Image 1 (tube, rainbow, N blue to C red):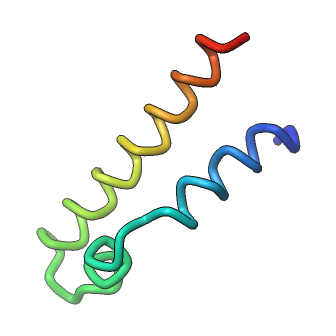
Image 2: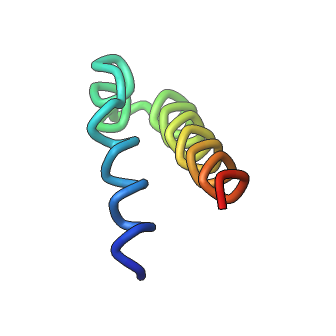
Length: 54
């Protein structure tokens, strides 16, 4: 993984809201899955924006 890609992903994770962090640890599979999907969408959007900036 390139350092640029790692940096983008790290930045998204650092900005993840508290509810998302809490829900990623949830025992309820539905709640955890929703948080995982929201985080994946945030990462995908950050990568898409970076692609458009090149």
